[in-house]
Length: 249
Image (cartoon, rainbow, N blue to C red):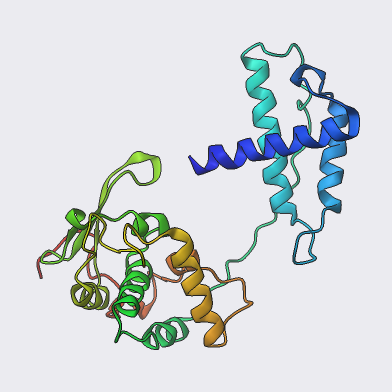
């Protein structure tokens, strides 16, 4: 759903641009030069932080247009595809910014767990870090899908709509048990009820990193999923699940 929303937004932005620059209001009026001109326009845009779009971001935006016009052509809404042959900018491989095991554990260990909110945050980040869950999966985790006695969670409707069982590490289990779950449907409750939002989780993690000297390194809460080296001795750490299958041990 999010991908559809983001792609449609890029299409709307394109049509706002060609309407303003060329007076184009009909999809059938779009020509190849208009798309190429828009691609050049994207290079000139300054964001709020004063930086230009990265080549990857521009690639995503042009890819959205190519997909849209391919769809229009295949469904015979246009007789010629203006995006045909337009080369999407080469995507450069970008190394993910991560912290070492010692650094991330130091950050997590500093979370104040005296309050229910702090306990919730510690449990969330430990679960993401040790079990490799997506932030959206943690946000949507329902109380009925958490089995603390068996030390696993059921993730429903994950990527490609598949359900899966995911084990909980000893450390995540410790804080999830102390937290106990929300009072309503969702295990991790928001500050004002309901589920804790993806934005709240992300913002909280960014503030933690900033507080302990790791801000500005391009690290997000999503990066926690990529901080596990399964070939290293981290597998012996209590931060790492002992098994990929649920266990009552």
